Image (cartoon, rainbow, N blue to C red; front, side, top):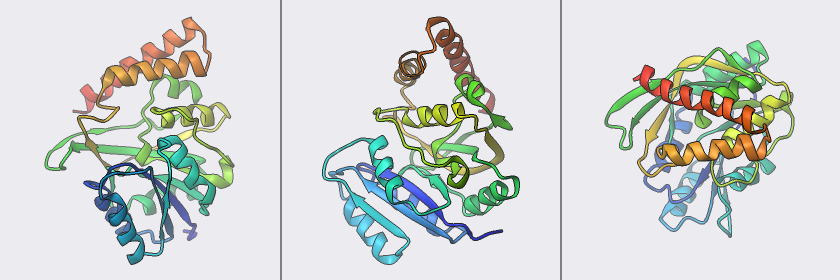
Length: 253
């Protein structure tokens, strides 16, 4: 397998309780050709001291300290500006990777020339003490398939920048990841699912994804206001999204 550089993008805001675990999970990867770009979005906890300590210990960890709170979309865009990798991976500050994550996923992407890939992920209680369920994924998703089933976990996804080219996140405060996949798949790319659980996801009570009503409202905004699908099409795809969002949790538990 080619030793391609992977740029790992991690936005952080007051993630001191979790960010060290995320960093350690990257350092422990069996695939060693990576850079981790952590963008701190004006944290008020002790995140910065943790991040600076990690950067001193491993020069593959690069820090961007924002002067103003910009939100996750703009934070990720700042990282994209300096990312040097042929592949772009994403890891949220409260998630963790299994040690073989990059090696397995990058290997499959190179072998099959995948532009985008994503994997299954395992959901745990916030303190990781209890496994809850695993989110399984389809073989692939195109634009219309994703509108029906927004199942790509941000911390599981990798983009081959050599195929996809330049991209950026639309500046919205939540579900900016979902809109990224909508915009990239609308270009005609296919996202390929990998049937291995390579990421651990913390189910946090205060997270946006835990607030199902808020998440649903934002998905409607993406379909109706940003994609301008019209009321009937937006209603159809939103209904499919709601069904699949419920089904994936019921079936996978």
